[in-house]
Image (cartoon, rainbow, N blue to C red; front, side, top):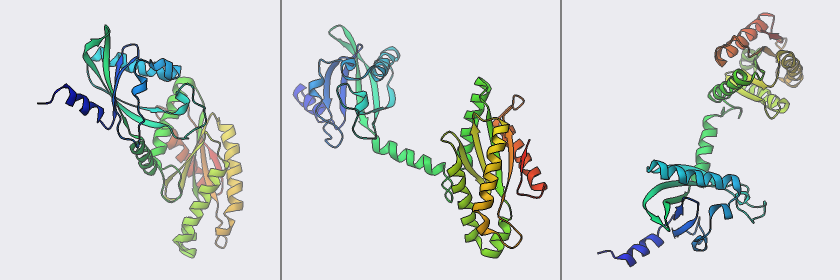
Length: 300
């Protein structure tokens, strides 16, 4: 039979720390946390309160989760981060990356000192979280250029469209592609064509603001999203980009087939029912630019 002494030994041997918190955020008891790779001895926390140790915004979040667990009586699972900037009395300098935890929070069916209490088990998931971020970035990144891919563009553009609909924040969209890429591939090989695509991607990166987005839409087509930008400013940007490309990509030209780009420009408007309509209008403007003999900028 397992007696109380045995049970205490089991609780103290838990790899992850388990806390008993009161409704007010008092550390009633601390068990486990024996995995020395991730945790320190937390026994000196008993009797203290979360707001005494954690800065107000983060402490309020902890108290909110405790209250939720007590109300629902169901197991809550939440991911959260903690850094030295969240803890009172520590300097802001420290590890650049916060530590990520998964909390499993369950209301207990007894009280301590006439206070409702919860069990809070915290597991360090920093490695898993970092891996998930890397996998997400790989899934959102074009392998050749390192720019966002079409899937990431769709998410970003949808968010900008929602901002436009809710707050009337202007957003312009450019769709562009390389002129005469097939000629370059045929005469210089596909390796030269890939270098030409990479050169365009690097140039796009160099002229974008931090809030702008560039993506490889497919093949030699690119899309640039310019938040807080109206058509007139977007046309100016597109014209400068067109001129820069003509200078930077001239080394890829083959005979009289110059390495240039054509650009279609549009702006989200109130008649659009989705970001797809904006994108189609940019594509239509690009098609018109191609029809004008390439190396041109057209707004729709």
